[in-house]
Image (cartoon, rainbow, N blue to C red; front, side, top):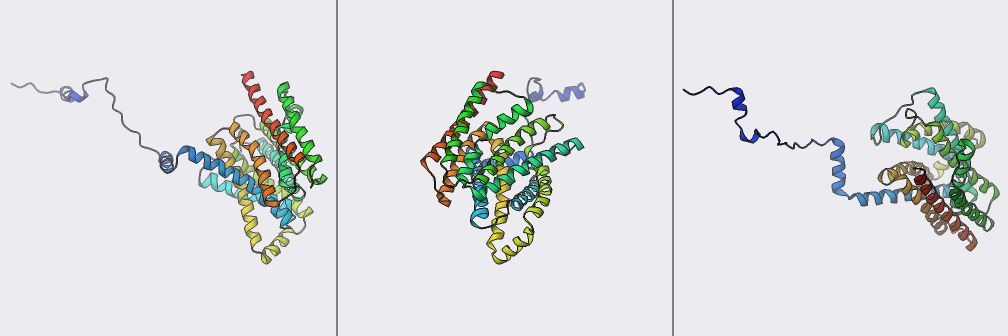
Length: 351
């Protein structure tokens, strides 16, 4: 008589499943994001992608400088505040598309009224910096403008000490000496030196440094921290609203003048749209470079960018330069590099 086979006996009768140590490796179904990354990776190597992003960052940074200079100085469009407001409107529009539609980064909301006013304060500083920078381009060549902009670490160290009482090492402060010395040399030998333009460029540089210090001070808690793309999404429309009354009061009926100029010369529409678009690409590629490399790499690339922008502007606009001016610029860039290295060593020693 054949013994009835139990369910347990039947389940264990397959020799392939008798070993309890065997692990079946079941591949995970790739998500849409992974599939997209695999698709991109199959078309282009990671190193080439990083190189293209860095090249785009350089082109957008230098491009917006040259377009601003051409519009404000050579094309005769003497409305730097209105031009800055167009930049802010462009950044707000493109940021909304990039975050809410393309979902480049997760969307973050403002959680409190206190956080809102902190971002509003940053927007005001941001406005001041950009307006001063665009105004300086009316009076100064791009090469000299970039030389002044390279002194940002000097103002950052000053504001960090005054506002937060944060002291750096003696090595860091010593590295700031050539930063200032180079600008003194470049200023004394600049053939197209303009005092008002120089002060505007200094104001822009100081505003940029102040924004970085205040941003680190205000948005400190985890609940208040915003991704750089989300921060731009909120700051840009606030900045546009801040600039609107100043545009109307200082630059008069600029909208009607712009429409009339565009009607007579259609190329102006292209210039303004391209200028505003490239202004946003500066912020987008800034984020992408940091994502694909590091913040330190971005800082090093920024040091080189000032020199590249200066050379390109001289080649395009043919502004006169002197040996002493180039020497002063080189000394400033060298000081910025020394400052970056000293800051890095200071952080390693602290940890």
